[in-house]
Amino acid sequence: MSEQMKILMVDDHQNNLFSLQALIKESLDAPVQILKAESGTSALKILEQEQVDLILLDVEMPGMNGFETAQSIRSRKETEKTPIVFITAAYDLEQFQQKSIAIENMDYLTKPFDPDKFIRIVESYLS
Image 1: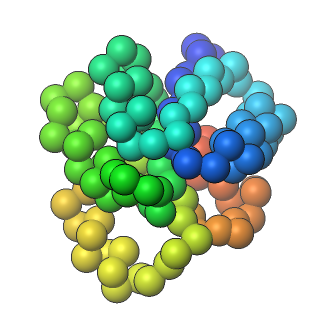
Image 2: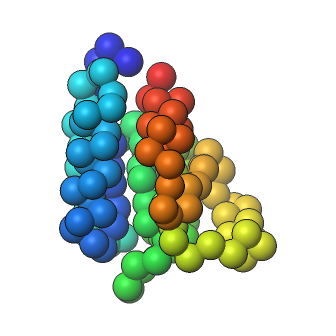
C-alpha cells in the first residue's frame, strides 16, 4: 500500500462516517484519501467523478438503500469491479445472501463490529 488509496464511505449518519474515518486514519500505515457520502445518490455522483479502491456501504439508508446503491455501482463499467464492504446493523443472513447474490467482490460487517476485524478487511482490499 505505497500509493495513496481512495475509500468511499457511504452512510446516512455523520457520526458513523466520522468514526469509520478516525478508525481508518489511526489504524492504517499507508496514506488513504477518504471520500464521504450520506446517501446512495450522493455516492453515485462521487463515483462519476472519482475512481476509488474500496467502498464501505451502509445497508439501511433512506431513499436508495445499500443494495440498490451496490446494484447501480455494479451496472457501471467503471465501477463494476470495485470492492464493496457492506456495513449493517440490520442483519438477516438469509435475506442478506439473497440480495447480495448478484453483487460480486463484496464482503460485509455487522454493527457493532470488531475494529481489528474491520481494519483487516479494509487492508485486504487495499493491498
